[in-house]
Image (cartoon, rainbow, N blue to C red):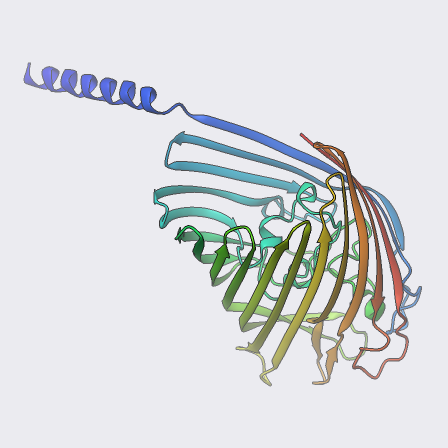
Length: 388
């Protein structure tokens, strides 16, 4: 009898708690997404610096399909997932870029677990096509040589202050790769300086790579609506370094290495103008190879965007040194490049964006190898984005 009475009291308690919670908060569900179709053309040479024919130069098709869903069963608990399909996905891991739950204890302390977009650059958090006037992200972000796109693990974040707001973020867990992940239709996005050297570089080499362990930290300062200054660090306890066959230039192995990346980003809003700039530096050292290899990466960009309402023209300059590999004979391949970009985004309706972009990719002047078949080239992009 006492046992039945106890179950009855438990039932009443759960019933009233649930009723009270429903009165205070109603679960919220939000679902959105987008389709990004592009026409893409690259004028790089038909023959790479290694003397082999390069891949196709033009293409048209679906570059991305994104689906974002959030669910808030409680006022302080949010569950979020983001699925993004592209022609270059090789596993479900590539499709699921975010899937996490986060509990807000207060504004200064939020705890989450799952898979997170790496918060070290605002462009990485908002790389979705409807949120950017450019169709191609800055190379320090899209190449993912300085930090991976996503990390699966735990995240602690929060903010303090009002007029001058300080934000922090610490994320630690597993990631799958730091490499020149392909994008677009023809795969040149993310591999702009590699294509003139050896044509398209197959990132995964037909195999899903193992996960690595690493963490990131970001400290940023917001002053009202004027601007943001961010300080960032990523440290991979295990990463990878490409080793090429000395005779063919083909990938022979991926050597394990430790990596540390440091970055600073600045964002200013002056009336209708927005200035974005980032600088990154990274050092990587192999842990298992003989001999031990040590490389240094660096990259930066600056872009100016004018917000004219339905029209957003922009300009960008960028420089990067992150395409590095070692031949089996010990010689180094170093492929720096710079680019000038300009474009415009036209948004006649909130759900629809048309983009045009032109880039001049400068590889002939900056390359640091003994190979001579490097030529500067033009890149064009037309994009149609439909969101819902």
